[in-house]
Amino acid sequence: MFQVFVDPTIQRLIDATPGFMPRAEGTYLFDLAISCPGSSDHPLVEVGTYCGKSTLYLASAAKIRASTVISIDHHNGSEENYPPFPYFDQRLTHPTSHDLDTLKNFRETVRLSNLSDYIIAVVGDSNQYVKYFPKDTASFVFIDGGHSAVQTWTDFIDWSPKLIHGGVLAIHDVFEDPSQGGRPPFEIVNALRHSKTFKELVQVGSLAAFKRET
Ligand SMILES: C[S@@+](CC[C@H](N)C(=O)[O-])C[C@H]1O[C@@H](n2cnc3c(N)ncnc32)[C@H](O)[C@@H]1O
Image 1 (cartoon, helix red, strand yellow):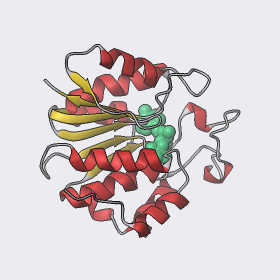
Image 2 (cartoon, protein in one colour):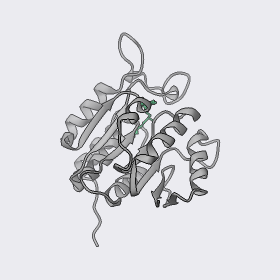
Image 3 (cartoon, helix red, strand yellow):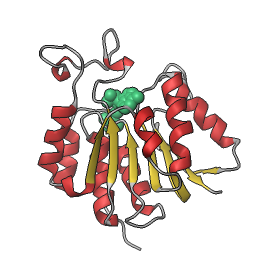
């Protein structure tokens, strides 16, 4: 048995990329994405690219699996990426529209990583794109898109059936203590704990994971 690590050059790029993925959670994301079942025909799926911080962990795993990460984002940010929320980053606003625009930054992250062969970027709404994505296809689904109740639940309901049997579902920003963050991801995890379809894996920081059993 040997352990695989994220390439140190990629790790430095990840550390320098704006985003919301602490290193311990990113390392766990990488470990989960490496070890889930499926072949190169079963992509890794990410909902919520932002500037590509988490995408690089998944692309590093996809390279080892000879697979691909499909990362979906409209790149206009979520509610919490706008004032008055603390997750607003003025540097990432479009110069004329003043909307958040993370696409240029994401493309530069991918270019610097040399991992573009392992990344397919879908620039659009996850609710729209999911309609064209077949069931029982993804080996791994990572949900980190819009964090409102409606959007988080919609992503969970839409994307979890896309997993193959044995595939892994990871959900970000799961906080038991409400003072640490919003409720929807935690509520979904609570529902999953009572489900017969998913078996809970270890949680690292705010990154929860479940294996599809049926
Ligand atoms: C918390 S950020 C993702 C952080 C990223 N995973 C990282 O590691 O830094 C959430 C992202 O979801 C995107 N998003 C929100 N609602 C969406 C939707 N309905 N469809 C596609 N992307 C969406 C936002 O544009 C934002 O970039």
